[in-house]
Image 1: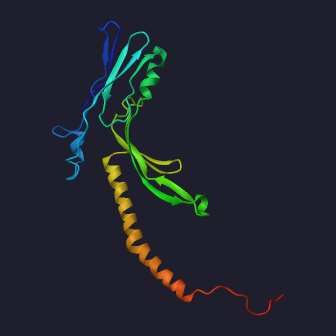
Image 2 (image 1 turned 90 degrees about the horizontal axis):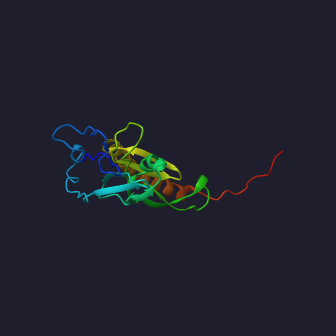
Image 3 (image 1 turned 60 degrees about the vertical axis):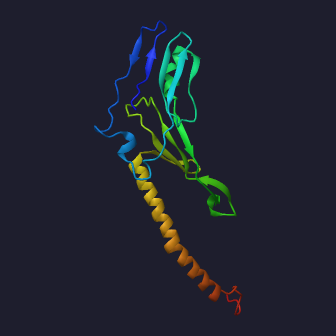
Length: 198
């Protein structure tokens, strides 16, 4: 849904709207462009509008997706802060990752930490000329993220995860079992033997 940000003046006669952003090819929407069989039934909550009003009476409205977790609506914004306020708007829907045991530097038992969590995000007013469109940002670990993933990039990443999971399950795990058996059979605690020389 193309919903340009619209500004209304205090006298309700001033109106400034952005030119509609080009969409996908005719007959195809963003929601269907990369839709697979299981994705066709995903419900999208109905959206509404957010409103930001300045202290001198100007109002800016934009589309607030139903999936967004926060409403950025504000009142009493100083006119000089309006531009930055609009730039700061991010529509976000977070998703869980996996809780795993990690050890910093590879030492010690480590501690549990969430990895591969993230969010679907959309910045309605990017300010850099890019098209505002929902993307996926994935938190790898610590302060490392995969950012700006579209449907195609997300598909590539999930394929990599599946490939890695298959590698761990079908290659690494059998080798681990075999190596453990070999180790258990042949390993003996090192003991000094012979007389020291030198």
